[in-house]
Image (tube, rainbow, N blue to C red; front, side, top):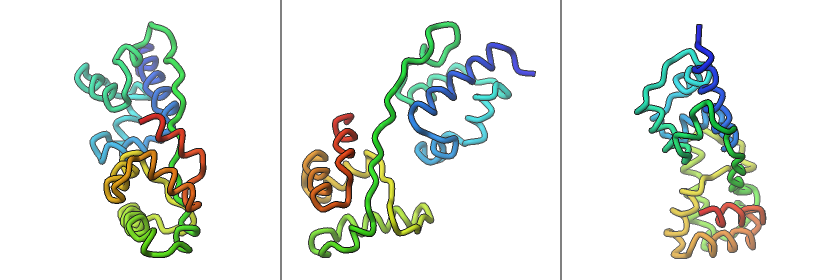
Length: 164
């Protein structure tokens, strides 16, 4: 039976994760398998003890101070979820290859890795946008504006670049 402290710690871990818009599977994906969904879930339920080292590593992964995860203090400060970067694949397919070829190849690679072939939209991460900016030899902000002008990114994507 989990202790009250373990339950409180787990609740704080869950609050931070959900504030960042991550599912348990999303944590596993974003960490490239470093944090298994089943393990993080057991920490959140209080079913599994978390070492100080693991707690520090989780805090680092979430980008928060360890004190935000520990029970007994103030509630976790609300974090605004990072705006989603969603590529409109239908619009992308209508663009000339000389213009959008690198983005189309990059998107196809992500789809292949994820096994995600819905063909309508594709969520990318800020790190993906940074990589694309290098490919296009532009800053992430310039590239975001260009993608917005092409119609493959929504104007809301500007907020994602501001959070870099």
